[in-house]
Structure formats: C-alpha cells, structure tokens
Image (cartoon, rainbow, N blue to C red; front, side, top):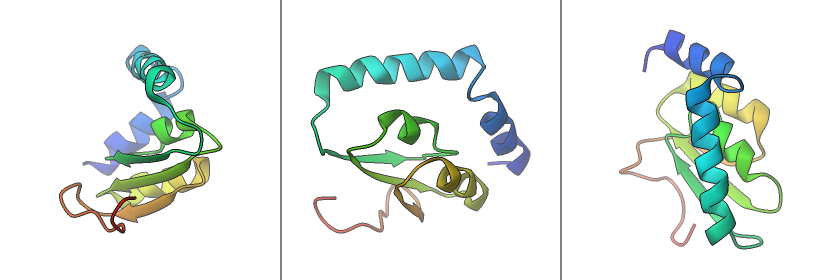
Length: 95
C-alpha cells in the first residue's frame, strides 16, 4: 500500500465515519464471541486501530506487509507484531 495512504488512514481512523462504523461492528461482534484471556490475530492490522479496540486482557497478534503501518501499530498496542503476508504467518501453531 502507498505510504501516503497509510498516513491518511492513521490520521482519519479516529474521526472518519467509515472507520468508526467498522469499529462499531467489530465491538458488537466481539460482545458475542469474546472470551477472557483469548488470543486474537489481526491479519492486515494496518496502524492498529482494531487491535487497540480489542484492548487489555487478551493476547494480541498482528501482521501487515507495511513496515510503516506496523510502526504506527507499535505505538498504540501491546501486541506481538510481524511483517508478513496472511498466507505465511510467522507464529507458532495454536496462536
């Protein structure tokens, strides 16, 4: 992805209706399926908006192909992050 687009997503993530709507949907889905201490993997985690929504008390993992996106993500969340494709995950079995 174009680095400028990543910067735009980072800056719009907290205010743009599209991202706010996606977060609203995620929160409602998580209420139905969440488990305390669960493990969650965000493939294409971008700047970390959804990982941050998952919050504390969970084991969080994220992958993205963009180093720039991961640098934003690292500032937002305590997660095990890796630069990788979703088809070749660099995590142990049962992660």
